[in-house]
Length: 221
Image 1 (cartoon, one colour):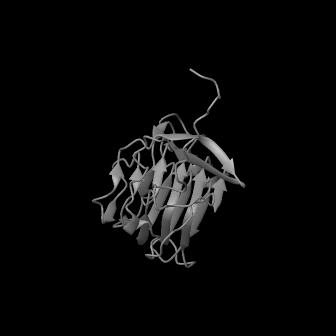
Image 2 (tube, rainbow, N blue to C red):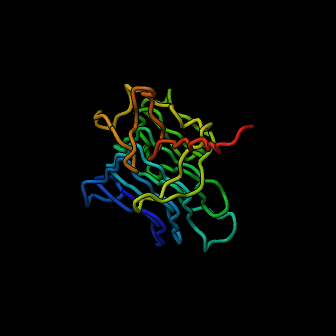
Image 3 (cartoon, helix red, strand yellow):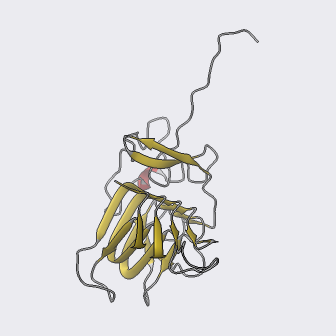
């Protein structure tokens, strides 16, 4: 699943509502193995605005921005993910490189008593002071650079692969390579295997890191 390069007034990538104090119009939103990248919003929420009920597993929210038409430094909701309500479950989620105005802004929980309910192993580069996180926070990586590579595309899916030294690589033990519902996720967003016998650990985010093959020139040193 992919939401790339959108532009809108409210949420450049995804805008979804469910039962919350904001709206009671839908059943919410769920995403596994997806990328929300390089979207812009005119005013509110760059990558995604999700209110009420949502779940995200092995998702990357990268390079989105909000408020580009506002004065420099103005922020109105997060450039990455804005969430409301209390049934917002995240697992193995990566959020990085998003901007609100000119300020790093990856996450905001915008309703009273709302939070992201962590089920473990989430990486948020710039959570700021307005991103409330509850649940199992012991394995989360906050205020950490995931060291992502440049944007690539595979079968229409844009993605940013973590570098070989990224803290997202092999951060998830095999016992936790699951979605929010506890079901094992075998493949990443590009169709590559999440784990192998040689390396059963999984990477945080939409895709597994890809090691480039060593070039052999055939010449003697």
